[in-house]
Image (cartoon, rainbow, N blue to C red; front, top):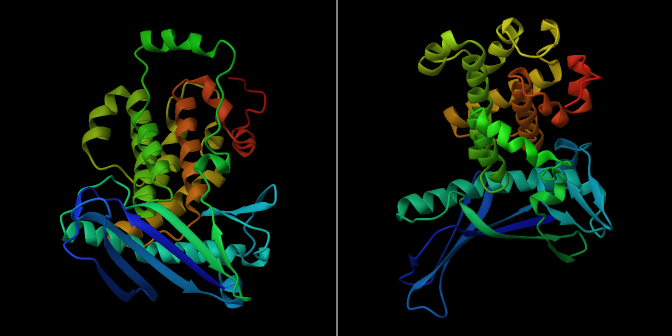
Length: 328
């Protein structure tokens, strides 16, 4: 089985003096970079980066086998693999496709970033755009894979209840604004597939900022210390400080930091540190991590007195907090 990923570099007004190609290996992945001149312009063109990786049954055994897949009609989706998988691809390969995609992206992203830096190219934050993918099966069949929009995973669905807009005037009058943590989280989510490292770093930062803002809101006398001095690690703050905060809702102090959330956040912080200090590629299930950060942010909103935040808690969170009968 072979997986090929091809990206177009997210860069504006690239003057290609001559069409050229470079091929090399990076992190064990064979990479090809092609600079092409536009047909309808004098010299401006585009830069494409592609890589092909072959994998076999051992990659399934050593990869992420066992992670859930979702069926959409006759197509499938696998976690952290942003392409529909057709039924002609054996489901046993789904986890290997996800693992191989992460490996390819981890090799291609620094190449694209290096090109933009070395040649002084401007462009949007995401390194790549116009991604394509294809799979070559053991029988030699070549299958084009179609990208999945993020909304296809169901995580971007939302609803405004009857009369919900009537709350806006009250919130604005009370000087309520979207917290910075949520703004950062949205940036992280939008980078989920285009820049995994930046997505993780910003996502963990969103959690840390949200925690500091909650403390500043509930303990105004500590605002200067929280905003100006380095804060303790996120999970330590949750375990040792949140239970004693004067939260504005009724939750037993021993239940305020659900263990399932602490586990996911600790893993996220450790991965973030590897990214920041060693330039590593995130090895965790990024989508699940970001969803955990978002639930933390709504938990912090709840502790700040926003009862409507309960509407966005998972059943696991509701049970952990002991607020099964809570309503927004």
